[in-house]
Length: 383
Ligand SMILES: Nc1ncnc2c1ncn2[C@@H]1O[C@H](COP(=O)(O)OP(=O)(O)O)[C@@H](O)[C@H]1O
Ligand SMILES: [Mg+2]
Image (cartoon, rainbow, N blue to C red; front, side, top):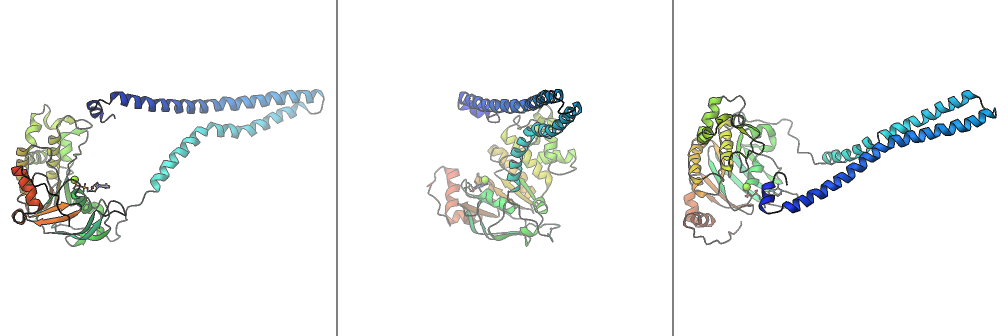
């Protein structure tokens, strides 16, 4: 509710939110109050019981002494013993609240320990010194859980330096494909190789270092714009950052900000627009200079003109570099070497722009609908 308070306001849910908050707060107050009270009262109760014990010992002892049944020293000795006996009990009572919170914490710790381990890396993990960027998917099968299958029998063969565009409706599995390539998830079957080396045989860090990724949801941190772009590569100089920003068409808007490159982005980076955020993350990827570039709806929030500019810059950057581009505006991917059309987890068409248009299938439909507004809107047949 805190991070989404604009949504809460926009939908007029303030009162409900306040009520919900009050309810939670009341619950917290109740249990907090009780916890404090109980842990606070334990000590006084323990000493009260101890003191009652003294009184009892003194009275009974006094009577016994007057009857000369015991010596005065025996009372003192007995008091010592009772004190030694109650001391550990008092200490236990003292840490009872600690024990309570330990149990609660242990539950959470064990929940974490019970999580499935990620597949360990091969002992003789290979690394590719200078990757050429040949990517192959061989009969890949994958689903987000063990019993569902999203992608099945997927075969893709990307030659070094090719630009691969992936298009398809939302939820088709485009991002999933990228996640598999970066090994964020394990395959159910089949394999993915880069330059002939299966990705399971590589160190995860080595694998991921080959990629530069620009995603739809931007990730920027609380810091200056300069730092945010420089994050792409360790030890980048200011000049390099500026030229990366220029390539991403971010330089102009950055310079119009009062503090320029020293502008501090706030926690949610809400002081610049969504499109500007995307430009910064693109600049970051350009600076990183990776072997394989992945753009997942990276320009979805910038205007079409800027997108074309970025596309030009990208074309330069992608020259001689394998790249995967996911975009909804088909005009930007027309020049791709290979276009994969995905639907429901499988590739239903593949080829170049001309080939796909000539085939007159789903892609042709999609393309025409974006330019003429006349789509037959037929459901594509999967498979
Ligand atoms: N982390 C996840 N856990 C379970 N299911 C997911 C996860 N991410 C995506 N999915 C599902 O996988 C399908 C493909 O998603 P995705 O690859 O993100 O589609 P898109 O083509 O829009 O990028 C969707 O049906 C989505 O609900
Ligand atoms: Mg996606």
